[in-house]
Length: 260
Image 1 (tube, rainbow, N blue to C red):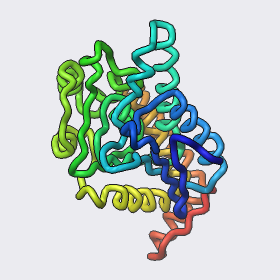
Image 2 (cartoon, helix red, strand yellow; image 1 turned 45 degrees about the horizontal axis):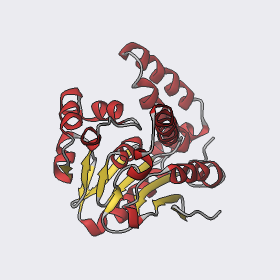
Image 3 (cartoon, helix red, strand yellow; image 1 turned 90 degrees about the vertical axis):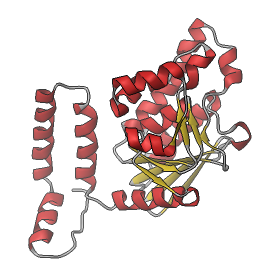
């Protein structure tokens, strides 16, 4: 399937989704969101990909934000529709049964920062910059920034970044828990693909159960979250992969997981 605003490539068990609008610093518009949604439906759902890397084309930006030209023309109703579109796409990414890693090689601002936070893990170039500058435009984040940022870095830190709109460096992002790792600029995509390949090789049913446990538990009380974990642990115990994994450990050999 051909796209105008994104690229989709498969390298073994790893899919690489590239936002391909370098002239506009990979800004997100309606067409790009729709192409991402189509990619999720037609490419990812029908392939053998077991992990995904998301990145941006060019040297300057991962995603520099939403397309300000489109935002400028929004009114109250169309603003709701534009926000709901992006929020829905990012929720689908967050809810995928396979891990998604953001390879952030430049600016991740506004919708770009929100995009990275919708991914399960974030690898940042030492040149990366993160921020939610919407308040400087008379706006608030529209794709989950007010919700995911506090969950990652804490309420007080998130409010400071949201209310000031300031950018943070890759190293500060690492210190506050916004990213998982910082690497030299030329290594960011390489490292993200290495990690994706590593995660693609783990037991597939346990991998999905792990993602589900963390995602579902985040919206539950501790007691309910523990029960979610109990249930998913039991599910894993009933799989052939558990028998293979524990048997391989006892027999001192590498496990061969089949997703059954």
